[in-house]
Amino acid sequence: MKPIPTHPETALRSGAPAGSLAVPLAVPLAVPLLDLRRQYEGIREEVLAAIARVCDSQSFILGPEVEALEQEIAALTGAAWAVGCSSGTEALWLALVAAGVKPGDSVLTTPFSFFASASAIVRAGASPVFVDVDPGTLNLDATLVGRRLRDRQVRTSLGKTQSENIRAILPVHLYGQCADMGQFDRIVAEHAAEHVQESGVAIVEDAAQTIGAEWSGRGAGSLGVTAAFSFYPTKNLSAYGDAGIVTTSSPQMAEHMRQLRNHGSPRRYYHNEFGWNGRMDAIQAAVLRVKLARLADWNQQRRQHAATYDRMFAASGLTSTSNSNSNETSNINTQQTPTRASGQTPVRLLSRSPQAKHVFHQYVIRAQRRDELRKFLSDRKIGTEVYYPLPLHLQPAFSYLGLKEGDLPVSEQAAKEVLALPMFPELTEAEIGHVVDTIAGFYSR
Image (cartoon, rainbow, N blue to C red; front, side, top):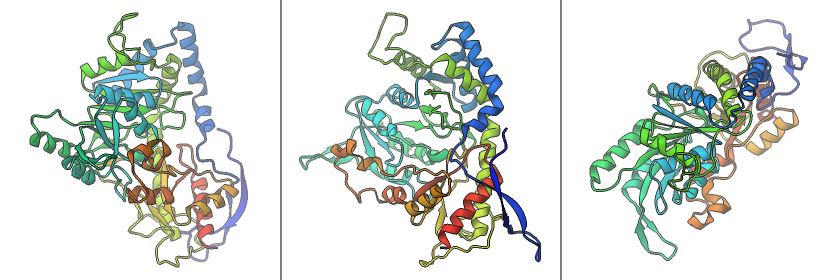
């Protein structure tokens, strides 16, 4: 790996013995939000060999590489089957349709996610029903979902009420942490017991950000009837283009999805239904197989980086002890102390469920004066991103649902505060320290 550009700076890190002299530290010139070049340097020869293997085989769409990847992803998640497809968006549509979602149905989901989580519901002919998120984790609030499932009356544009035909719940495992799947299971089981004459409500996982994550020891991808994963180039397990996969433990659903991804065709030139061209390219599968062998180590490095952020934020005074997920001593520069006119710390960390094995697709904070902070960091060449600046219920595309500002207040407030900081396996402790130091400098002005 090439050395990271730095410049010397004199600083005294906290935790040094009393009376210690300041020592020169190498401070990064820039810290990107994500740096895929570092990853590529370590796997370049294997990736090129895998691509060459596909070229030599002349099997470019589906085929042995995709089948091998499907088996490996199924084993990783604990699901019985995996079906490779062309993108995470395609995976969501396949997962919903295979789970029985059809025109006229409704699907309960979060407004605090990427657009595809809800647009896939619309593509399946159903209507998204947005339910607010938990204020700690920002995952779909299971208590509110249970309440909405019990009271299925919805007001139409004419002022009348009608019963929603809720077919599925689509929790999004946000930022790398699974939603409260135990509570969703209980909600669905209770609903089934009370409505024995109705079709059941399916749980479909949007696991686009959680490859390798777990809930109570079970892998993301095995927690619902189907689950959709994305291999977009920024994901923890990323392709060199678009790709996705769906997991399930139902052989019937797996076979249905194989047909749907191939124009509804069980065999060439024979079509049982209207599907789509959603097949996975063999080159993407080959690249993913190289990376999959390293995924557990990469995810562990992300967890270690998150712990480093946690302790550095706590030691800097930017977060409170109760807000921090770690009580370890930090190495962060504490010469600058942030001001808190409101009496609150300027940075809050998201909650982490004890049942969750987090994979930190993103390390996200909630920050006071978020937009000012982001510009301050950008001016100092520190990469950040806002996931997500406008909740889905306020997007123009969903205006027909009739929701307005104030209807889902937790999501709306989160959209004003969340900020993703640099997070990738090859990130260094010096880079993390520089990010936290710079944030401390912003709040000390």
